[in-house]
Image 1 (cartoon, helix red, strand yellow):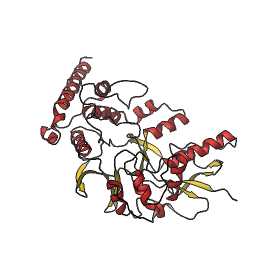
Image 2: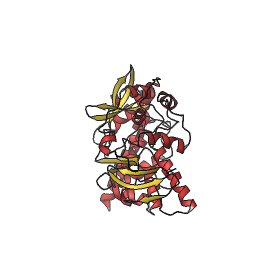
Image 3: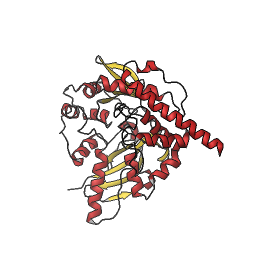
Image 4: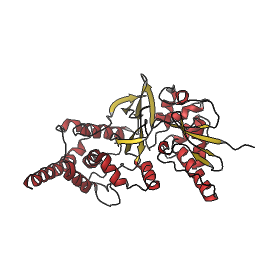
Length: 370
């Protein structure tokens, strides 16, 4: 019985192949996915590692079971409630591991199919699945490809919706989470930073946030979690690389997260924008995901900062360090009226902003005196 052989594709470029026992061949090392590490050795440990790494990579391209409604979604398409990476990988492989975050996909060897035929940017997505994602409703759905609408990770209900040839991301999670994300986005717009804009909308009578997709057939995104895997496997210093690539938006991220009390800037919630022409980083991708803003907002210190490298410091300390490096970069006043739906956060926001504003002026004065 012949073993299955899978080919990892970047658009229509075959970059690697791997079979069911872990034997692999890499054709274009520079076009490999950032969080997929394969070796061409044939010893047993390498083969096991190859299979483990491949299953993990495939599993990251399907919804995770800690997602709200995940079980309902899997039930609605007649799939198993997968727990292991191997089980999740099987689900992702049913739709060739296609994603809206990048242009990688998988096909079986000698399978005659092209990127144009399977990519999610050009091919139809059924709006019925939006309802399953946001509301947890059960549908008897026969088309397994519907699951690919929900490859977005995270703990809040989300779904992609095609609108006039492009996509927007719909996010629920309850009124409080929606209001917090909207408020954080309005504050963020008062500062000079690359950002995703979250707008108010309604779905099935409930308020949600909507935002535009930040990827395309030209540009992909790679999470910092995935980039760290790449850095470790290629002996790169992640901190030095990121600061050289885009120090400004790195520091602005720490300033904004302190001001809005964002406690969810884990390494899956920030990362780099990739050019699909050469699979190389361009800059940090736009600042996004604020439905856990204004947590740990009862003190000036804030939560522990998750974006610093190898240190244990507070968000306040990280923000002060950032202001020292690049300034505050506020471009307009934050009006009190933006806090209309969440007035309890206004006083703490003003206190945090005052601290950074004062420190920014002090830093500027010190530089002028040198």
